[in-house]
Image (cartoon, helix red, strand yellow):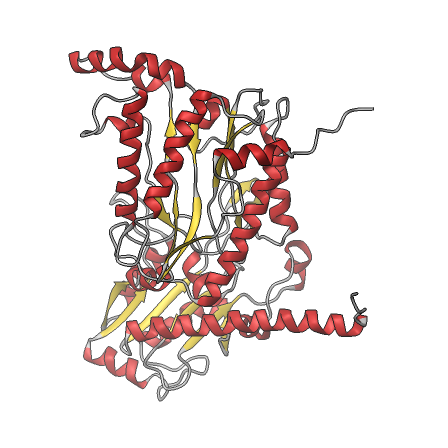
Length: 491
């Protein structure tokens, strides 16, 4: 028998849990900045800036999404925010800049953080106005005091400037030679033109190293994000049925995301039925699903700025056809065997290569390729089998890097059969011979797309599947779909 809990006590417990969660984030942010400053060294001044707002149309902006590196270091999700780190300073090593509160703008656009709130969120005690950001940089690079950072506090950096060994570091976005300069590149260019005594360096490798290995706090948030995403996928499976539209499945999934407190989707939800399942980033979700269709659903949420990734493919009518079973079995085996490569010291490249080996054998058996030694498989498996996840769903890091405990990634093999692929092959004698041999199989499996994707956390003992609550095998999928509620009938 459950004992009733007094309301006042219940509210106190809820408030304490929220405060504990906020404190855990603040402590984690403080530790992240400390690790970055250790890597930068005392001669450095580090800069990070917020993402710009993006215009949707006329006077309407897109929903704001913070720059990943700035959020990683501050936990601040609002625009017009900057961070400066000065590892060599005596006291004020962290300086945060936030926009001044403006009652008129808040009436139109919503509340901004006060300086005290910014401190409470980030753990940074020195908080200045956004308008003071460039004057502050000017003062530091001319060896002057500003905003509480005086000559005594910044003596080490000022000495480094005088000796010509100072460094100004920032995550500098890459881009092609002909691409326009990013705002950060423009800022660094202005600093080089106006001031002397330092070199500019790209801090992206330092941040990549830190972001690759998730802290215990990040792991817990990612687990929560994965659980919400998995529940969203289950809701989508319940909504899928012959005669329904793809957007109904999409709506059911995203309702779970928002209803459970997610910031938004982690990436635009992909809900493709029939031939639409063969398009990797199919955007429309407007097709009416038919009995006999496969439905490919690639959808997950952004919860607490952590983004898992999950894909399931299942028959709208509830039962796989024989050709669908053939392809699905290969993809599932590829994921299972690739998971065997997911261990400390391995790499995402090794995971991918194992998935490719399985898919090659499977495609050859089905008559969709004639040779497992070359690149024919790439006609039907067109993407990588693994990528990192974290603040970004395609998170930072090199595929060849040795895996460590605390890294998070997906395994996502897929096969997509489209007649247009062989129609587009150059009509060389070799290709004509290939087409002649594989055309019957292509015709048999045409317009079928299958992907199976899960998110994983690597631990010393192996990879932990974070999205395993969603049915994955043919038997489990069909059993789940048999239990779907019947569609409501009109009265």
